[in-house]
Image (cartoon, rainbow, N blue to C red; front, top):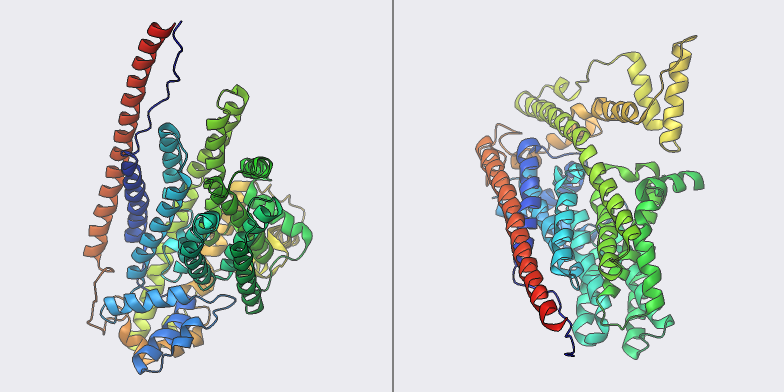
Amino acid sequence: MKERPQLREPQIKSSSLWLYFAFIFIVFGAKAVIISNFGSSVPFWDQWSAEGLGLYCPLIDGTLRWTDLFSSHNEHRIFTTKVLHLLLFKLNSGVWDPMVQMYANAAIHTISLVLLLFFLQKGMTQGSRLQFFAFATLLFAVPYGHQNTLSGFQSQFYFLLLFSFPFLWSISRYRTGYYHWFFVIVFSGFMSFFSLASGILTIAAGIGTLMIRWICGIERTRWTAVLIIVLAIFLFTGLYFTSAKPETKSLLDFTIALSFATGGGLLYTPVVLFMIRQLQKKPSTDDYSWFVFSLSLWVLAQIFATAFSRGSGILTSRYLDILSIGILLNGYCILFMLQKYGNSRRFKKIAIIWFLLIIGGLVGIIPSTLRSLENKYAVSIRQKNNVNGYLASGDYTFLQKKPHLSTSYLHINFLFYNSGGGISNRLKSILEYLEDKTPGQRIPYFNGDRLNSLFEYLENKTPGQEIPYPDVAGLKSILDNKTISSILTPEVNNRNSNKGLGLYTEHSKQVFLLIGIGLFFIGILLFLFEGFILYKNRKKFRQKLIIYNSVFL
């Protein structure tokens, strides 16, 4: 009897390139559509002081020092953001246009995500790779992180991702070439910290990975010890120069915040199981799974730090671009385990339920996200008109406008923003106020949708949002600065004539809208093409399998 050779499904790697293009086109296309529809060229909040007064005025006056690029902004040192904005300012012919920054941020975010997918997809079969890219595309195409997408001053979140992923990959590959990876590790770790304060956790995750491999006896070399010491010096130096004021008032608030971010821990079960398996198997240092392990440490550290520093605000839009990496990682771990233990029906059902929960959640937040985008755009129009009106006429009343709100609303708004201890205390204070104002009447039940609507209303009707700065007198002082007023776009200050690249104009918005829509649909076609290639390969494989069975059985 002939010995039957093992027949393996062919792996066609060349077509994977189409998956990268499909992901880039859809994700960047979706961002271009959002920016062109809802973006504004009015600087917002911290931009006026940190960017306008702190960066462009010294640049134009000739007093900008290189040390200013490393100066602190709250608890952060946003060196990378400052350098980017200086480059964009020069590229835009000396015009301060947040729209230019938004498109640049969209490109940086997309590139950082492609880099992550490149690191994660190693070891996947062609079928799993297609599923993984499709899931990642859906996850990052939904605009839940619109506060970052529609702000020119939020690139620090994207730079954190851009430098953290190469750092963690280099840590996982360190044994394969000490000198070569050492430079990448030091550089990317340095840049992570000087992008966002939580970049210090990138270094901590790297140290954690090296220490665990040392403890497990996998990697105990002189160069590893040297790297651990160098990174530890970076870590403690960074912590010394970082001062964060946590908003969490109690252990209960911290626990609730963690529960919000992890779905009560259930959504992160795949990562925990993967990490346990990694410690049990103890693979060699050149195994790609160590990158997944180090990324797991990084994600968990980011969640714990955000829960500690932001409390119940952990699910605020601007933090979701980082937290979403954890969702992608859990999806990867499920697909990884399906490849290893795919014959288990129970595990397949659990995997399907997990993915359906995530996809259902993504689809479910789209209506509220669109409402938030429309509200934000309406607010930005009023802010632009008020700033433009003041600059054109000098009439201070343009900056003192407030929406017509009842006394009851103003009091509720005050309770919402000033009752500490998280959402539960805020809601309790509001309900107590309503009960006092409506004696003898039963307060209606606040379900999730009604509560979200209340919070959205409060956030979008805040009196201070009639101007793009928290302080009326402060904004007046900034706008009276001739250097600042002279570099604003003609849309914001109609006395200016320099348009720069003109990305704020209606014509440019229409162009980018069409480009975004076009890229989005091309990306979908590329996914369909890749699916067709996969179908043909599997069909050929089945035909070969039939022939092999007829010969050897």
